[in-house]
Length: 215
Figure 1 (cartoon, rainbow, N blue to C red):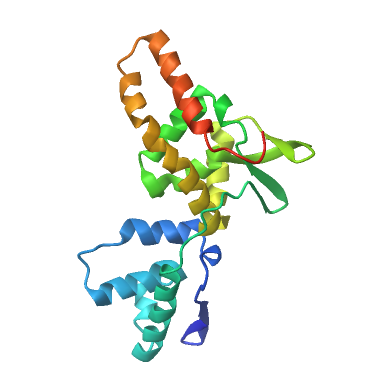
Figure 2: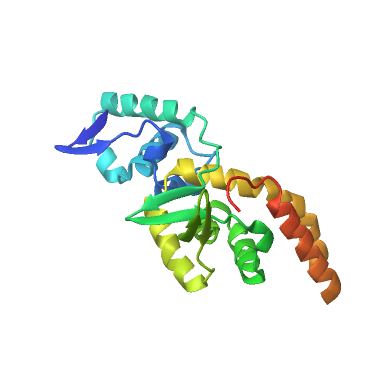
């Protein structure tokens, strides 16, 4: 269904793949348990449809109630948890890093810094994990070398173009193993160089576990 206000139509998403990362970040980072039910419903519509609260206020209550029911049905749906290895945006093919065991120190540091901000920086995390495919061999592929400048630009694109389905699956895959090396990270900061290198190798090993598909 569409939400129609003053003759303008706003599409009401029915699936997670119809919501981009920008709207989901807005939804999840501004949600408040302390808000009233009415405020939560207003927040739900505003963030997931990308409509200002002033505009929503001009709609009929009966229409808003129907939209809320539709969106609550969406919220109850489980998001995709199957890692999407490749996708295409504007003719460019992007692939999930197939060699986490070869993660460079600069990539790891940037990932660590971005992950500290949780979903707020998830488009930046995705820009590190997903990069343009530069070479293929049968079912395997290679992605371009990491560069923080191109990653920043890619993050801006991903913020608008990546669906929650793709992001949730990648985040679930990656974040599920983050906790496994948090203790190592704590030790890493206090260790000498030799121990640091060993800890980093351990982190890479943990990151590689569960990786499938390409190499």
